[in-house]
Length: 276
Image 1: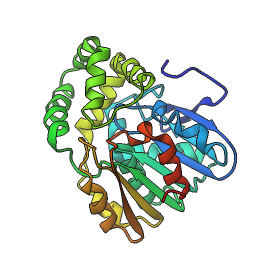
Image 2: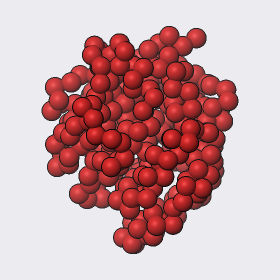
Image 3: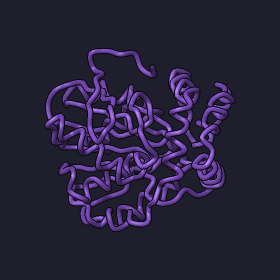
């Protein structure tokens, strides 16, 4: 278990999976989707602040956190986009605002472009719309491809995980998060199933149609970039915004790939549209 079970936590069956959902607050709905190797825990400080004025829903992606996974096909961008939309449909929810971090932003862009979701506002935090470059590309691509052929690798990697290595991995994204946050990621990385899901996403990720998806986005779009992000170049936000009809990019100084965990108050201001 990654987060304590509370009355905010429940499960929704959709697309053959049992999706873990965290929900709190009342009002217009905001949907939050995390990135690769994370879980709903990454929104832990954002959700309560948003819930003061909104209904907030966060979903664990397939194989991540407490959502199960049945097949490698669950890790494709299209499958995840269809699945997230199916969860909303089963819950009879139409989010007014959708927010994605990293790969989660790409998943939501796909769902909105295909008109599976119809929000008024789309927000990306360090959206991963293009293949990883730099250290992330050189490290994850070979490991992800190897994992696709070696079912034992996730168990080996999770067994080798230590808090020190996880802390360094997080720091290498350009972000410094709280000790509590490091512990939560460490707990995730100790689970072979979670590691397998993260590697499965990386091995299955096909972004060749992403620019076309961005061009189809109808909601007002905000692409946020942490200037210290070492996983996704900050100019990715500008490139993505340029593809959209009604979009802007926002660069945040001094924060990295996990900017919504580093400064949740700022993230909430951006989501609510009060950031200046």
